Image (cartoon, rainbow, N blue to C red):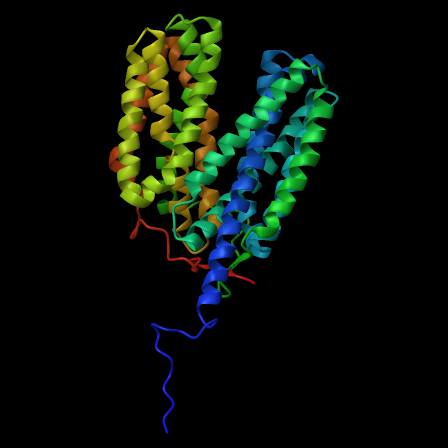
Length: 417
């Protein structure tokens, strides 16, 4: 008598349903954990940024000296980002990120305990190393989670980073108003958020490169495909940096807004961009990467054009809001596209991160230099040109298939139990 196998349509209880349910539950926990990790990273960055006035006064630094010291993080991040790919390859993505997030929570303490400018520059160099390496590891983990859940996730994660930065900055402002020493404030922040990040990291996906994947070299130039994707991110981050750093100045000097209204410009710009990132995942899933980026580019170009042309506070504020919403999803989608390029996702992400980090560094200076020789309106006309280039170049972020891979798969990464 021949024994027939069960019908695929009616599997025996516990044979397939249980493993599928377990994978779905694991992916859901990993998504929440990644959200918390991004929020912790943002909160530490926002908390440290909010205490820079204390640091300047404590060390009796001039504006020029502080500006010189604040260039060190960019140098450290640029040097460290390529190393992060090797670290993630050697250790599991979960282990590497758990340790890196703890280190990231602690490094601001080096800066606030620095006894002078040379020590501060060295501390901020280490700060940049921590920022760059953890940034690459976080986005690599975000890509793995996105592929596992089968939905666009990186925009949500970047939105959680922005939300965390707002929370960290708010706590820092409260500490400053209370007259709390920044060393005490940041030490408490480090302990609290390091514990939260370490605990959340238990539920991250333990992803490693495929068994036959070669270890990436410590330093290597990005491929042309990665550079092309990075160029798209460069334009978006340039616009983001211009809006974040010059919105308040534009409202006060060009639109003649009151200092209080101008001071709210940065918060409004960041808040609208954060909200758009948090909500953009379903939009990407519904309309696809290319159409989402192109629609955002149109909004950003309109916003930058309004800012460049107007001399009134309300239109300028609306223009900055459109600019923030328009470019909000481009950076996370750039990282997602990089992770689908090449043999090693973390290596491609590191290459794109280096390009976009450079853009964020130079954007405020270029906008200021153009404004000194012409006007802020001319500077934001340049921003409008850069955001307009996102319309034709959005196709570089789509890849052969715009949708994340089916749940349960992780591209070139193997998931360990």
